[in-house]
Length: 123
Image 1 (cartoon, one colour):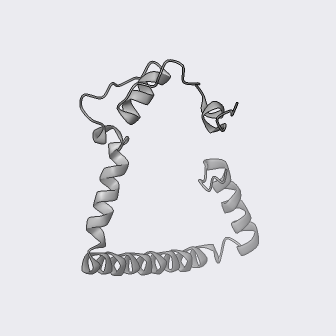
Image 2 (image 1 turned 30 degrees about the vertical axis):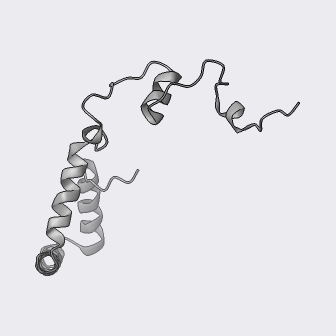
Image 3 (image 1 turned 180 degrees about the vertical axis):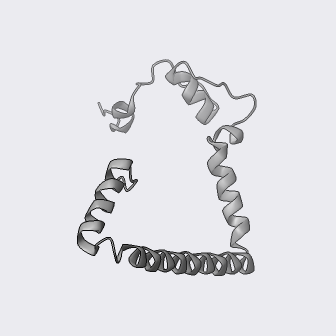
């Protein structure tokens, strides 16, 4: 949504506006000060990142981060937990029932969730 990348046309407009507002005489001095400020900001960010990395190593959080990255790159974490003899695809509702409960439902049993939640009819 937000793209902060500068193309050649955007840089040209910025330089043109800077020359008009600041003036060609003071522009090198302003750009030098801007460069020093950006350099200081990068140095502070690098130092902050170093402190965070040190704190992560001291608390053991790095191991947790590695495990989370392994899970994220593994993709499907449920597939390895599946039994090796379990079928990859189930064909029918009866196969699902067999897999879940290990038994075959009676042939006259109603199918579907609505029928199973209804109370038995009394005569």
